[in-house]
Length: 228
Image 1 (cartoon, one colour):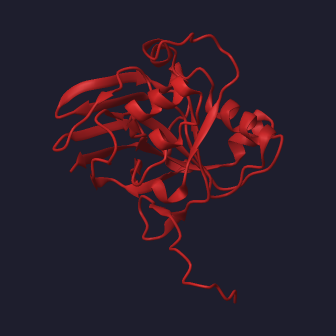
Image 2: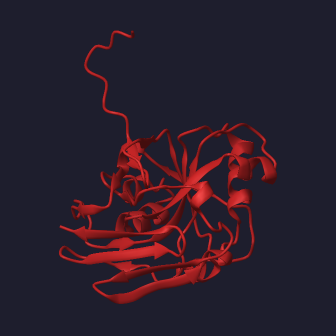
Image 3: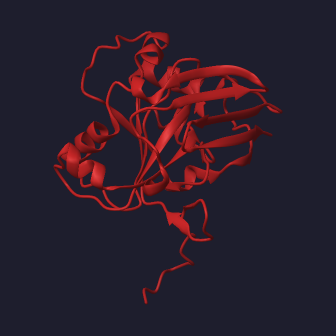
């Protein structure tokens, strides 16, 4: 048994549908601008250039429910996403091998301090301060892959206080789930416990204390978050 200088932090984890067992989280990869319409609303060319990634710390992930409005921002945005959970991994994976690594899937919201992100972009600095804050990745219970009808098609949507904000289909992904994992594995070994947030469709917008965000991916699940 390892002797640490202070008690080890608890393992970050997510609920799993149909069991009390939880999914242990190792790393969280996020794909930027993976829907053409969202790329356009961000003022970028949606051409199929190689995907790019950013990360969130594992303990930025939280279960759905109450999420506090974070400090140092006046422009908090919601981004509904299909989330992949890996049960195995490797390096330089083919697309077929990449698909075989997927343990399950879920629905998450990438909360973004858009003003801090925009400032970082303008100054040529990393995005972390806009993306990687506490409780910035609420994710609903994961669904084992055997219970997921499709990772190629299905409506993805988000409502804020009952009004539809985001609505698309995961078939609109510029880079498919297999391609995302394969490309990731060419840069570093992916592993069991890794989460991949696959990108958000158009319609991202500000949310405020008191707002209730509800979204989902058809056939996989839904998530509800209240900004407190």
